[in-house]
Length: 223
Image 1 (tube, one colour):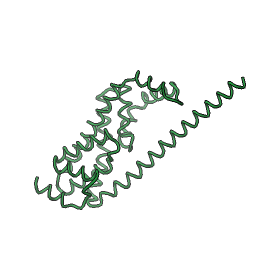
Image 2 (spheres, one colour; image 1 turned 180 degrees about the vertical axis):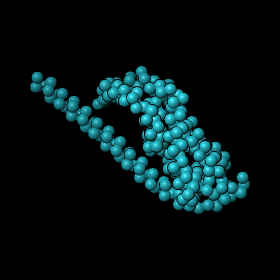
Image 3 (cartoon, one colour; image 1 turned 90 degrees about the vertical axis):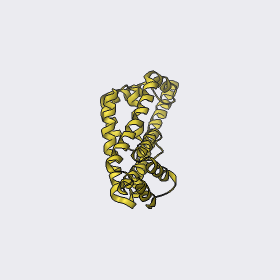
Image 4 (tube, one colour; image 1 turned 45 degrees about the vertical axis):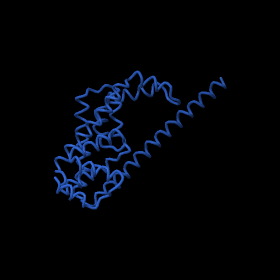
């Protein structure tokens, strides 16, 4: 174990920031350290999986942990973090969700009802595929809990989706070696694209709602 730590520490990866923090966890705890880092990444999305996962693969390539251990513990960490968010959604509940929604400006009860109906029809695909989409990979667990998706189904879908996402990024770091940061930059671009699309969609939604209210107000004044 001591030799593995020396090998990883001697490798030229960043010593500070999130990369340094994740490296410290892997050096100290091995595979479970990578699992802890990914569990926290699920609970706090600003912690980027595109840094933690390739760096874990890089550590496996340096011999600090085995590749099987890297994939097992990071996937377990993903599931644990997702289940925590699922339970938060379950405890928050549908009634509270509707109560909060009713107090929000520019939204209608029908919007939430349509969203719920969509999740009932497509929730399994949303949870499975959402695990492979930056930003949504954490957030999708909450509506699954609110809508009370059966926990065994949720865990199965989350495990499969997480295993695919984690495998791609861990193996990329494993194969790229010292160039693992290429994964961070590439996935970082994807995350920014997703974020921009979400912001544009939200802005469009707000614009439609505002115009609808203005049109309704003009109609009332002229009638």
